[in-house]
Length: 121
Image 1 (spheres, helix red, strand yellow):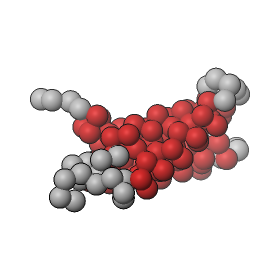
Image 2: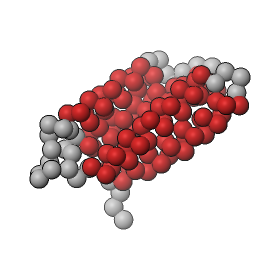
Image 3: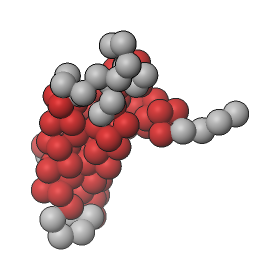
């Protein structure tokens, strides 16, 4: 079995969906749900995007870059919020803004994919 970035993006999409639902559940039971709800929203917004990128991978040249940026950005952003909730401090200085910037870059890569199709697409 070959494991590629494409396969990894689908795996991460499933894990992000799981984490998003778990964070939403935790937010509904905590005293201050804002951080967990934010982490949940980011995971649940980007998991379907990764599934869509997996589906269009063969025809959109920027799909690998977009997936990588969305994965790393979402993990950084959501992890920072989870750490702030659980430990009272962030993952590392500027981790949430870095994650946010990477997510925005990932969405820009998705948009640029409209102008850089592969093959007959």
